[in-house]
Image 1: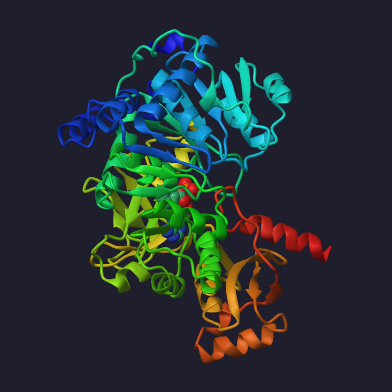
Image 2 (image 1 turned 45 degrees about the horizontal axis):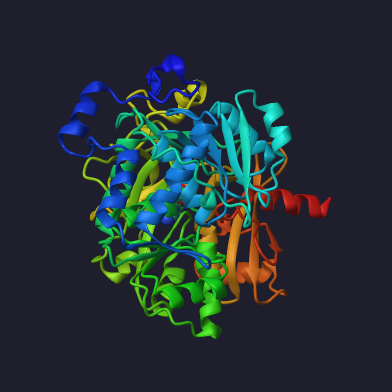
Length: 539
Ligand code: OOB
């Protein structure tokens, strides 16, 4: 497909490309193969045919059925004029239709733009425009006004809302035989992920066929996924973690099944785990905390689970140990990013390593540097910003040339913004975000460190700390807690910190109680929104 015929440039733009010598090395070492996602999905129907692929409250489908339904819906999209290389926004909660629409787009060689169900009109419009999307596939629940979307995004030719009575999965057959094999190559853009983060609009992350296939295959290998595995999709499948780490794609690729629970709420998820004998799942720490609480009084049958992955935000050692003892399976910490780099604790790591670290890089060719503010490598074991380059890490955000100039170094490292420290074993410990630092009386205080200290207090269930702007450049430490004891005061915290020998300059200046924290679309604590809410509640 030439650039000229496609509104989306599936061939990576020059500033996003890997240098030729690097590409040759990744191919030669086998990180990048010759396959593309449409070939792979097609091959699943042959390789795994009659095996169970998808289990929901409504469907129990084998691979043959799943791929046939995706092909049929793909033909409908082709009938609407969608061709290989064109972008289509997909925004669907976890359900059969998400999987069918995703696979349909991949079979067509079209590029899914994976919005999360919680994204709003503003964000969807922004990414549709940026991707020059030709279509929008969604649901009524997502609450997007498609007429407004179509008038705002000039490239958008159609929108289609699925519903339980009119599912993408049940689209009538138009009798035109299977889709032809699209013309795409391994280094073309296969899908566009949305950046997480709580600042500004999401950015688009172009993942290629070769890099994403490596991403989910290597993850599946590391997690020892087999055809006997059953992956419970609890987090929204449009997110990199449940999509490809190893997630639904890594599980299906190995011939395992994907289970879609009616919701991620503990009771329903527990029923799905017990009913369908789920063997692995992935959670963010906030959801893991809710499951943990529920498991204390529900006594669910979780005996089929062999691996519980937790990632997306810091899981502290106390919470990790609690999870490890409550769930009858191995725990794995995953520190990853839609931009690429994935770190996993290994299945055979010692339990202290699993509890206290966020894992180590997936791939031998992941080049991780830990640097100070001036970009110099910090001495071993010290904290600095994580920079990364590797076979499944992007070299630039999609159509964001200005932003890319500071988000990437001139030699192609992605500046993650994460503060980390590396142990001699190569395992990383995430110490917070570089921007998440409070400047108080000339001292820098990492919010993450104070949050960990607060969580050590027996009455504190969770904590978030951020900067309250003061006069001049000074900032105060504002601690917000979810606490069993609503009477806990700032003085109580200070007395506790004295006993814990926390340096006095780090003590909170202000304490607020909340029932729960606002969350980002994937379920991470949204501190920006929390700060805004608290600021508004005082004024
Ligand atoms: C995952 O991806 P994103 O793109 O939603 O968010 C990435 C950012 C990281 O840069 C880091 O700040 C934070 O989320 N993060 C963690 C973490 N995992 C991600 N911070 C502390 N501990 C962790 N375990 O969140 C993501 C993508 C693939 C797999 C897992 C998570």
